[in-house]
Length: 146
View (tube, rainbow, N blue to C red):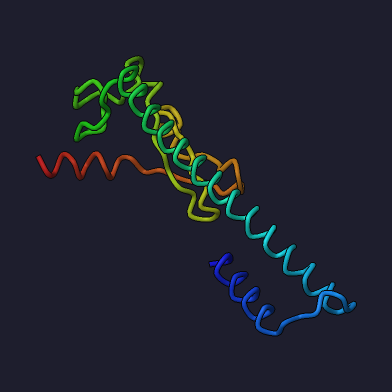
């Protein structure tokens, strides 16, 4: 698009039959040359950016392949890579289980462990808001559903 506009301006200037021997003519012809060089440079940069974007996309695909080879397929329905419904994906002590909550005040995502949830509250590290958890209601609701 930029190259097309520069070509249009160049055509207009040629149509004006600018005299290159006058001061104004020299300036206008020099501007035309600068515009041509700018267009060539921008086209080269666009091409380089396209190459970098293609390279990044290929790298991302390759990285996904490596992650899948190293960590396995994490696309199970329950989100667990081991396929165990009761697993919390840390494959260790329940104290290592992590959960994420979003602070209603600042919107920051906070990772919580099982002991933090059992304490019943945690202070948001971003804004200091006290977040409280009442797990007894959830346990009663899950028992009622059974």
